[in-house]
Length: 195
Image 1 (spheres, rainbow, N blue to C red):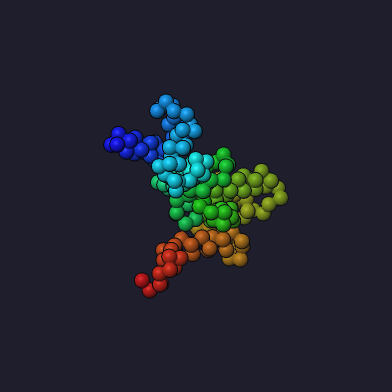
Image 2: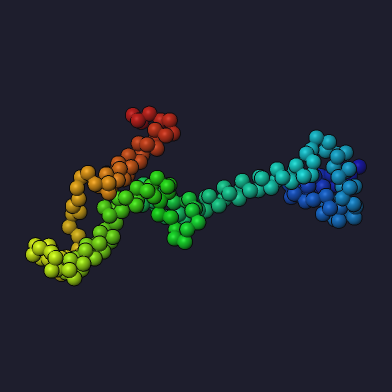
């Protein structure tokens, strides 16, 4: 009798824990898959059918794998250029994402001139080269500015723009997001602002 109960525990472990099929269990014990199914029906009458059970097992494995993948991506993810949260989204492009959401991607496109000093420097040098190459159509002060930019290799002073430009407004939104990150986080979690 002990041998039978040990057999039941062993088959229970193979089927319910390790996810073996009827056929695989049958091969191990030199039985047909139908004999294994009947054995499981007799000893575990409330169990799900093999197909239902395997689907549930696969769904559980998939959820576990997705959670592990999410954690792995979270730990190795670069920070978002807008809010500094980890960038874990995937869009299928060749380059890695720089933002954590499509909304932030749109903000980055609009405010990039203000946020990326390298881009501003390259644009200043490009604009200065264009002015110098077409100097016959430009004023003396514009040409003098272009030569100053080239001499300084595009080094940046403070950025100047109209306060009503779309880039500047997007830049202001980014500054608000960066400044208010902790407050929004507490608010989203349902905590009061006074904490």
